[in-house]
Amino acid sequence: MRQNVVVLGSTGSIGDSTLDVIGRNPSKFKLAALSCDSSYELLAQQCELYKPLFAVVTLKKTAQKLSERLKELQCSTEVVFGVESLCEILRESNIDIVVAAIVGSAGLRPTLAAIQSGKKVLLANKESLVMAGPLMMRAAAAGKATILPIDSEHNAIFQCLPLNYSKTGCGGVIKLSLSASGGPFRGWNLDKMQGVSPSQACAHPNWKMGQKVSIDSATLMNKGLEVIEASFLFDLPTDRIEVVLHPQSILHSAVHFADGSVLAQLGNPDMRIPIAHALGWPDRIESGVDALDMRSLGKLEFSEVDDYNFPCLRLAYEASRVGGDAPTALNAANEVAVAAFLNLRISFNQISEVVEYLMNTYSFSELRSLEAVEEADLRARSISEARVCKIES
Ligand code: NDP
Ligand code: MG
Image (cartoon, rainbow, N blue to C red; front, side, top):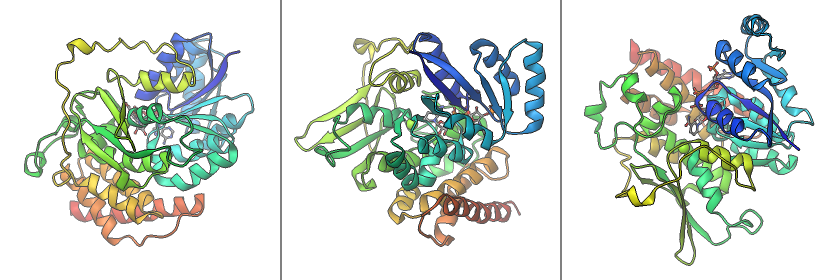
C-alpha cells in the first residue's frame, strides 16, 4: 500500500530533494499535494511530473496563473490557495506523511495542523518549532503525531538515540553534540565580515540550500535555532547540547551516553539521506546518494565554535535559557534582520545587532497558545523593524 505524502514548500531546496527521493521509490509513496508561495512555473512542472491531486499556493492571483499553466500542460491537478485550504488538505484522513519544508514563520500554521491531526510529520521547518516548541510537542503527544526530524543534525541524533528514549526519560543520554560546518566565514572575525554581500553569505561550502537558511548558516544563527530545536525535540536543556565545529560536514551529530560511549551518524553531505531515512522510517529506503568512501576521507576535524565573532549562537542559547516566548521573539528578530540584509538595508554584522537589541529590550512572557505565539512574533517583528529603520537612518 503506497503512503500519501504532502510536501509543503515543494519548490524549495528541501522540497526538491524530497521529490527526488520519492521519485526513486514510486512503489512506496504517492504525492497527494504540493505547495509553494509564488514559484508557480516550477510548481506546474512538478505537477506535470508527479501528478498530485492538489497544488496549493498562497495567493489567489498566483492560483489563477498556476491554473492557466496546468491547463496548457493538460494536467488535472486541482489548484487551491491560502493557508486554511492547505491545512484542510493535510488534515484529510487519507494523508499519511507531511513534509514540513516551508521556510520561516509561514510554516507555523500548516506544520502545527499536521501535528495536531496525528500525521507522520517530517520536520525541516525548524523556525516553527523554535517559535512554538512547547505547543508543538504537546500537540504531538495529544494527537499521536510522529515528528521525524530531517534537519541533518537532528536526524543524526534521532538515529543514534535508543529506541525507548522518550519512554524512559533520558535512556542514559548525557549530552548531544551538534555539528556545525562554520559556514562560508569560518575563521573570520567581525572586522573581516563587515562588508560581505548577500551572495558571499549564501555561498555555503558544503550544502546547497535556500537563501534564508544559508544566511543563518553564515551568522551561525542556524546552529542557534538548531540548539533550540534539539532541546524541544529531545526534551533536554540547552546546557546539555553543545556545538562542535566540524568543517567537513561528514559527521552529522553525536549522542554521548553515561558509560562514555559516543554514537554518531556519518554520511555524505546530501539532504536526501535524512529525508530518505525519515520517509522510510522505521525501514531504510534508497536515497540516491553515493556510499561514503571512508578510505578517501582523510582528516575529519573537530574544534570549539567561536561565539564571540558569531554572536547569534550565544543569543540563541540565551533565548532558550529565558524560555517562554524568548525563542519566538529571537526567531522573529532574525527573520526581520535577514530580510533587511538581503534587501541591502543593513550589513551582515548588523543582523546580530538587531537580534541583540531585541533580546535586550523585549519583555518576555509565557507561551500558552497559538495566539500568544503569533502575538509575540508580531511584537518582536515590530521592535526589530524599528531598529532596522534606525540603523538605516
Ligand atoms: P527554500 O527557500 O529553498 O524553499 C522554501 C520553500 O517554502 C519554497 O517552496 C517556498 O515557495 C516556500 N515558501 C516560502 N515562503 C512561503 C510562504 N509565505 N508561504 C508558503 N510557502 C512559502 O528553503 P529550504 O528548502 O532551504 O529550507 C526550508 C526549511 O528547511 C527551512 O526552515 C530551513 O531552515 C530548513 N532546512 C533546510 C536545509 C537545506 O538543506 N536546504 C537543511 C535543514 C533544514 P516559493 O518557491 O514559491 O518561494
Ligand atoms: Mg541543520
